[in-house]
Image (tube, rainbow, N blue to C red; front, side, top):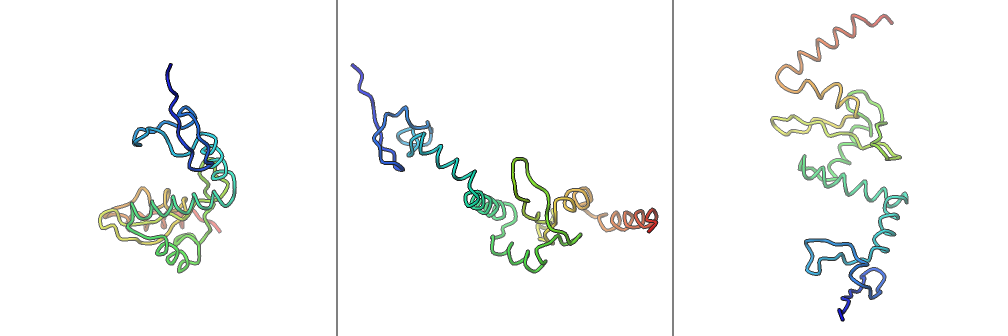
Length: 156
């Protein structure tokens, strides 16, 4: 007769069969510390409550700032405050929403790709459509040409 191995859930405290825990390869026991029911409840709370979504958003954004721009959340918040909470180019609030999200994204960090120097915070439209395709030596030239083009066709 085979003995069933058990483990105690660190969330609910119940002693359960190993089948009641998600598998994870990097753990000594090869199982998560919370049982499947507790994990599901935690994830549901995290993704469906406003407080959970705000926490998820804040800590996810903080990690990206640190990884890609060597910038803390505090530095981002100060820059955002200096800009009045709006895009540095068009002066509007961010309205772009990622798929499945009910709140707008944070403003994008615009930086020089060669030096890494941060220029400002831009909305999705300005960052992807205006600046995105003209990074480099001829950026000023292209922007001047684009301005001339728009003025030419602007009949207001």
